[in-house]
Amino acid sequence: MSKNRSMIALAVVVAALVIPTVCLATPPNPGGYSSFFLGASIPQDTTVTTTQFNPITTREARTQFDPGINVGGTAGYDFGYVRVEGELSYKQGQISGVGEPTYGVHYVNTDGHVGAFAAMVNAFYDIHNDSPVTPYIGGGMGVASVNITNTKGVDANSGALNYHIFSSDDAAAFAYQVGGGVELALNHHFSLDVGYRYFGTSTVSLHDNWPNSTDFKLASHNAQVGLRVKF
Image: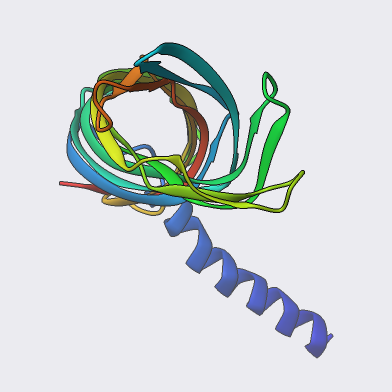
């Protein structure tokens, strides 16, 4: 009997501690907020087109990537069901392989990466309910400064090292993203944000080797975990 009473007492204590926390962990009231997030970016394979103008020739290289980082922050206003925010973020992917099927060349052991610093305006719709977990969906648009670094790699056929697969350069492009996630309220002021974003850009044209041109589109899948602070 004493053991049962001890268990009941423990249960009462746990309930007394947990119930207020759950009650506090309700979706936040309208107001301003800011957040910081960190996660992984997985760029999609893309075709990089290089045009040489003397003489005019075009080469297409199918470029593959390894996952990289996705980091950024937001500041916005929660209107109750709709949130509007500004976002600054940086996404990066490591170049893992480059293939030129027209010439039968494939480069491995590559050293280089592609990155994008983006400034976005987002809008998200919050699906409120009676739990501390609030799903949301939405997207945004803005501008991104896309860069590629000097990229070298080993020719898989000959074993020769190519130091200039791509040359370092950057350019601005239109950017967009769509996605969703869930907000887990910790209390009235703090919450965790677990989300997914599909990020893409218009065609980026690099002209560092003028008059030559290097063109490609950047697209990536991005997972992120963040901390949101309500003012």
